[in-house]
Each structure stands twice: as structure tokens, then as C-alpha cells.
Image (cartoon, rainbow, N blue to C red; front, side, top):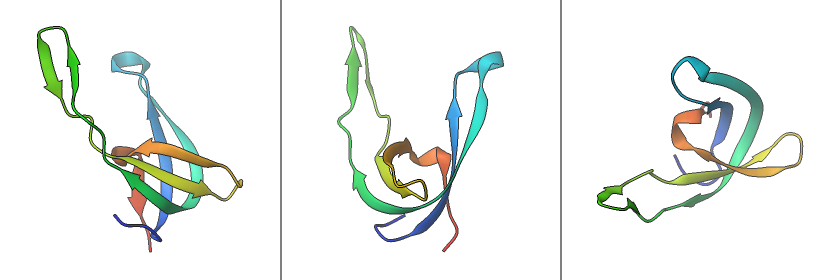
Amino acid sequence: MKVGDLVEVNQMRGAGSYKHVIPRGLGVVVRVEETEPAMYGTVGPIDFGPIVHVLLTTGQTEGFDQKSIKVIG
């Protein structure tokens, strides 16, 4: 995934039996931001992966986990 890719965003929210998908529509990748691994007390490091910032067709730019994004063009 790279800047300029056309993507479909289906945002995954929640966990377990509360997990659901929110369709957010189409957009264009404007930035891929690498994140630092997180430390939670003695647990860690935990790598959450990059945050992909997408300009949606609604005009809003939002950051999503790359698991919520599918490259379509």
C-alpha cells in the first residue's frame, strides 16, 4: 500500500462478540505513518503496525489500521 492508491475502507471496531464492521467508502491514501511499539507495564513491546491516512469521498481525512483497508486500484 502506497500514497495515491485507491482504497475501500471497512473499519473494524470492537472485539470478540462486540466486533463489527463499519463501511466507510472509497478514498485515496495520502500518508502512511509508521508507529512506535507500545509498552504496557511489563507487557510489550506491542507493534500495532502503520496508520494509513485516507482522504475519503466525504472530504474527511482519517487514519485507519491497514486491516481495515483494501487496495482496489
